[in-house]
Length: 205
Image (cartoon, rainbow, N blue to C red; front, side, top):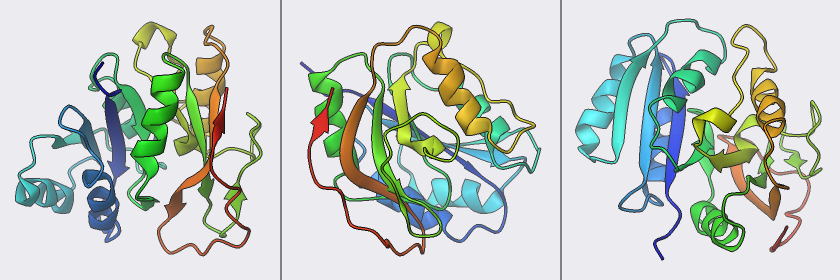
């Protein structure tokens, strides 16, 4: 059986020096059939040039809608370009995945196929989102990973700051089985310092 496949979607805008670090961290973990789609908020020459320099067929750049509003329209745009059946992985241009991120996600995906997979992350203030609750302020948008079945996905309310939460809740209303939680910190905001401890390894159904 082949490993679960992942499409990472990364919205970006001009003047984001963290983008190269974010892309590099994901690139190290991409499998041969995985993808990363970098979606610009309008034209982003630095992102285009970065992808051209990498010359990695798994990583692409597209010019998305110009909204300058937290990347939600760019996520929606990238979602429509993702491979069907791949797990959708959200990573902003200042999100750094930890070295074991995709390995731990794939373990959960293989053990509980077809179910959404969630994980812990460190927010901008350095605190760990480890509440395991789908409530506003208790979960970060990147923490929710689910298979790309378009008729079972919600949408981003692109005019609202909490739009990533809107996507999660509207997706869960479409009849998904219970989500799986990987009880490890697998992502952090670039530059954040973790203030409370890693909750430990393992995952549950």
